[in-house]
Image (cartoon, rainbow, N blue to C red; front, side, top):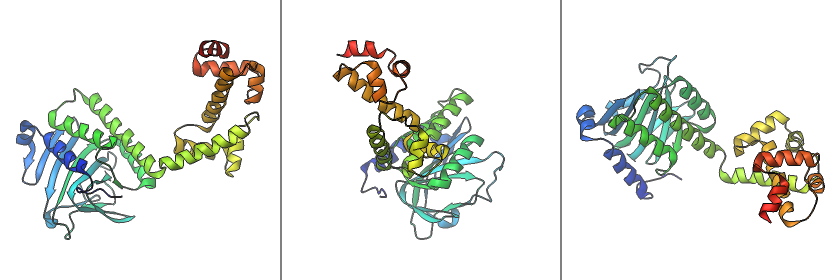
Length: 305
């Protein structure tokens, strides 16, 4: 669902927060009739209000930019609306919506004639690796996203703006750190769009149920993959992409959960527990258990009971 200023008081609060990042010194340095701009350590930032469609139109293929060293622009709508167009179509950029674009690239963004105004903040920087990562994510998740103003992605964007307006970065490595924080939150947000929590939990619940009912069996990833008619490698990528953890690690986690329960609630021997939970023998169980809990099963049972 799209966010509007009426639906989210947080959006109006965000607009005030962005405005507040421009100190008097920053405004003297970068104020123009349509907004304010700042630059520091290869990070550009701005807040603008556009009202004339004839004077605001960017084409990603005609802008001055080196394809071997691409730039990234991230632009977030605070009020009014604009439009973004690429090979997948044209989308309205209403309040709470944002796009990321790699420049040069086959896209356009502009103030359409149907919109009276478009108020937004933007960030721009040059980084080869981050540009490749963003372009790769957009192949699946698209370029235009609806982003809650209280999201971590927006919070990281504000830190980038602050670094530009208040000159808070000590050196290029400081800027690099902040840019990678932005990339991480961008990737996380895009991943969540493609794989909502419900889908993730459904997959985990499915594997949990299967493993629990076959706990004593020698299950491996290949057997889990076969249930989905996938190869071991393809299933591993599928599982990691949706859950953030490997299937092998998740199966081991489930086995150890049952081991811990039995250590606390029964007097079974380690050999019996190992046999019933899919470990090769007690020695194997002890090795895996110690790796996770940093103490032996026997010590765990003694301390926790």
